[in-house]
Length: 317
Image (cartoon, rainbow, N blue to C red; front, top):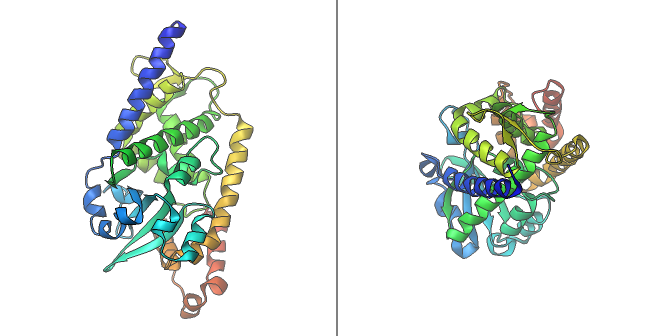
């Protein structure tokens, strides 16, 4: 393949990747799940641009009775969205800012981020993989203010995938299988976090959306200049210089984990009901935890040792 042909191939893969990502924003059933919460979130007057629904609640195969919706709300600016100065101040630190939204008896976790923060934190210069990891997976766009807002989400997903792919490829030496690459790509965001470990979560995410991820993965690798080594497009090789160095991956993961720990005080300040949320996540991982009345009244003193115990037993990692 000469230089012109290769350039045309990359341009074609780039257009295909954007088209795949745009089409992937429509997830069956997502609108129904989001509907009870949209009146409180879809406010153009407060500067809302787009609302994303993500996580296990999107699919029956990964949802259970303890699952609750996870939203990302992209806004024009913190001043227009947050009514309280305290929330605007928190919004400038380690974005996004996470809140609990109650609608009747239903609960949802809402992460608020400005459009500028989203673009910055999914780019190659992002300070951690928190937002990039979420946008590298399939998410549902359940509301957007206009076509430009939708295009910003596609751009953010594309940028996140490019960065996550470069880092993931550092773990492959020579030719690799597409599904192995995809599983490693999905798993990278979990490695960069401090979170409840749910056995089989990564494999379940890939299983439930395998066709989507394979199509996106092939287009993504095409943009990176990879060569398919078989007619079915299941085995690839990337040219030298595409993958990040292993040292870059290690630094990125260490920095992301440090920033994940630094987010904890912010969560305690902004997320009303963080303790019950944590207990539900532990239950989903297969670890039921019951707190005494004293632990509930003073969770920062008496309940945090339980979290420490979970970390020692690898339930949190």
